[in-house]
Length: 167
Image (cartoon, rainbow, N blue to C red; front, side, top):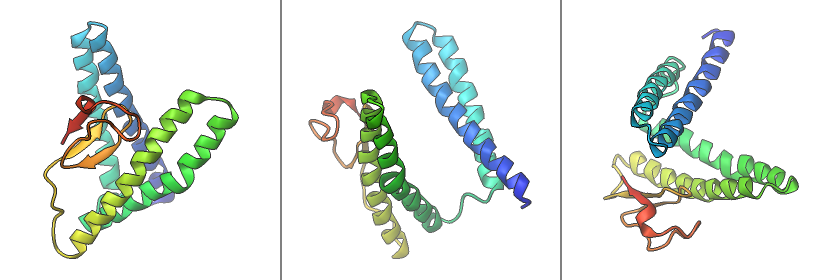
């Protein structure tokens, strides 16, 4: 692919991905404020943005076989835990931004777990098998991730068990 086109599609993928998440958060806010139809509109258009992002990623050959996708996920999560979030935390600390530090801490702790889960999954795929899990539980406050059962209290943010979402 031509370099300028590739760069453009990567930037479009990033922008559409951000719009998708932004609109989902806008939908939650609208619903909390008593505007369910505006929430619905935000959710619908968020899905359209996801379609755009997915099309761009496919065009960039960004989706491979499961083993390749797992390796890319491991590399992404490892970059976040080893480089990105420690640097962002240092900046937030230097600037006295405690809420940013908390958000960064939550993400960092979850990303460590995600990297290990992806490594386990990749090992299974390399052996020609799927992973053996019943459910995945995500803390809706901090993103802490665990398999098969939610803890009574989140070990990262202390949220109660009812704050976990089951997948």
